[in-house]
Amino acid sequence: MAREGGRNENRGRGRGRGEREERDEFVDKLVAINRVAKVVKGGKNFGFAALVVVGDQKGRVGFGKGKAREVPEAIRKAAQEAKRNLIRVPLREGRTLHHDAHGRWGAGKVVLRAAPAGTGIIAGGPMRAIFETLGVQDVVAKSIGTSNPYNMVRATVNALQNQTSPRSIAAKRGKKVSEVLAHRTGGGEAAPADAA
Image (cartoon, rainbow, N blue to C red; front, side, top):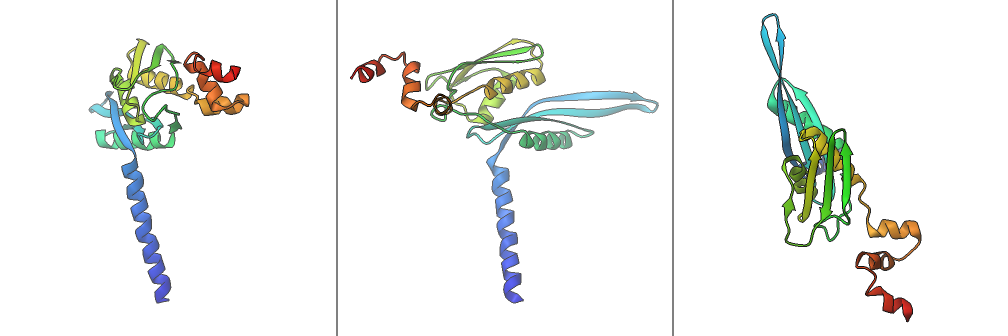
């Protein structure tokens, strides 16, 4: 019996450590907070809506909305929803996008462009929050149309979902990754190898 108790204690300790690591793994950023007033007989009831972006800075990102009477509770709900809606985005060299992308949601349109090392994140507001939590270090992004943070975030996520890696393209076409990458550089280096 003493042994079983010891095992359970260890299991419990291990579980707690895992939960802490999981919490530390994600970075969350508050994108927007909106105060809503409902007029009632006795006065006004205030509520808060929060938009939060969550990511592990290694290629996973998600966003969520939360509503509550208090700001911290709204942020907590939004972060929980964001963790449930994570998407994986393939990154080139772990720092930028593989190719340019266009995203759209409602009146929000975004253009994302891959950038050389040292460029940094050239993007505004909600888009910057997504790239920072995603782990992108070099990107140029432009929002065309609405500046509504909800639509901008959704349009950016839409563009990121369309990202494909050379490995996945090579698998679909039944080619080698090097053959697919030869087209990225213009095929100048790959031409002599094909001829030989």
